[in-house]
Amino acid sequence: MLTDTQWAVLEPLIEAVRPSAKVPLRHLRRTISAILWRHDNGAKWRAVPDELGPWWMAAQTFIRWSRLGVWEQLLTLVQERGVQLGMTFLDGTNIRAHQKAAGAAKKPTLQRNETVVRHLAGLVAAMGPKLA
Image (cartoon, rainbow, N blue to C red):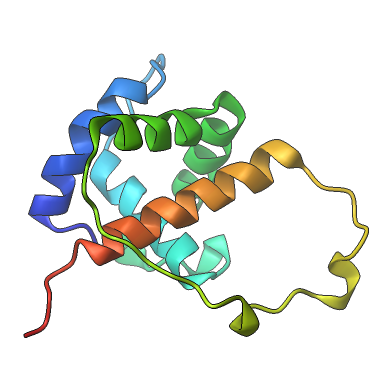
């Protein structure tokens, strides 16, 4: 999913905010691609394509980083450095909520971080090759 150019821009930013771990995350690019793919498509974790690695690794990384605030730090860093990844606009008339969505208890940290990742996924998608 991530081109070499996109990864060259994102890798140093991700490394700057990535939490240190006992075991370093192998296949970081593949895992980040899986997370971006999942949020870009709105699919369930188990639907992540096999070539992007095990779905549970991407899900575990996303959830762990959400709790640690890594996604928010990454978005802040991207904005501070003025990285031009492009823009994506969503028309709210095409986004529908489930009828049970009104009044449900929210998990503020995870909800906010999913929004941040979707925003980053949109920015990365906008970096893709432009059609003439």
